[in-house]
Amino acid sequence: MARYGLRLIVLAYLAFLLVIPVGLIFWRTFGEGFGAFVDALTTHSALHAFKVTLIVAGWAVVLNTLFGVLAALLLVRHRFPGRRLFDALIDLPLAVSPVVVGLALVLVYGAFSPFGGWLEGNGIQIIFSTPGMVLATVFVCLPLVVRAIVPVLEELGDEQEQAARTLGAGGWQTFRRITLPGIRAALGYGIVLSLARALGEFGAVAVVSGRTVDETQTLTLFVEERFENFDVHASYAAALALAAIAVASLLATRLLRPKDGI
Image (cartoon, rainbow, N blue to C red; front, side, top):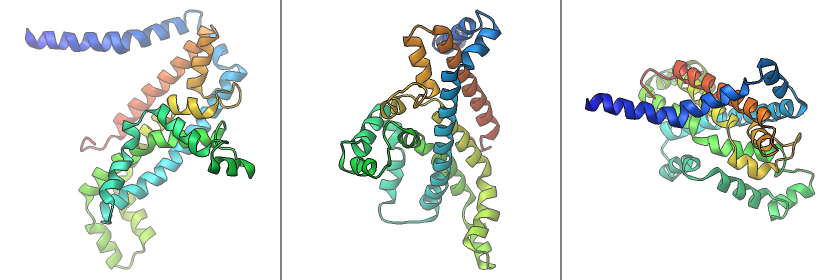
């Protein structure tokens, strides 16, 4: 009885926290038919929000993938002063609120800061534009690729890499033929996680974007703006699109998850 009671509590918790709210969004989205759903997502503002979201998320994933691979190799294959501090700093985005991240970026790159003012004086705008949104998204997704690759690199060891270098292989050749095939699954897993996190980011992007409709509005900001302006159907449609992307990402992570459970 205790076992069944525990299962019932867990299922009820998931139902009220996840299944019922998402189910209501699905029901209200298609309450007026599939045509209304398509119309809500094909307006100029919705399509522009999709475009901005894909641009920001795409750049964030590319930058985090490059940094994640380099940082993982640095942490696992090298010993240097400050390594533990560097390792701890990578996890900082998990502890800091995204809103705080956005505010920090405004203080550094805003027009009224010394550095941000100098950039804008030279024609480079960071805050309230795409570069600032990319920076904010990169920060919140920073640990995901690194933490997916590090355990796999530790398990692989460096014996094969040393053997390749002994036989005359260069650094890039060793990475391409030995290291990359070994971390391919973990790298794909980290990329998918990073993409899902980037597509759904709200807090940091809301601070640095300015929330300008048809200019710096991502899909998550579009959901909030449409809901506040009583266009609930468009808000539900965009929210359902985000939920569908999240489910697809979840399925992808299950397929790409390394066999050791990382």
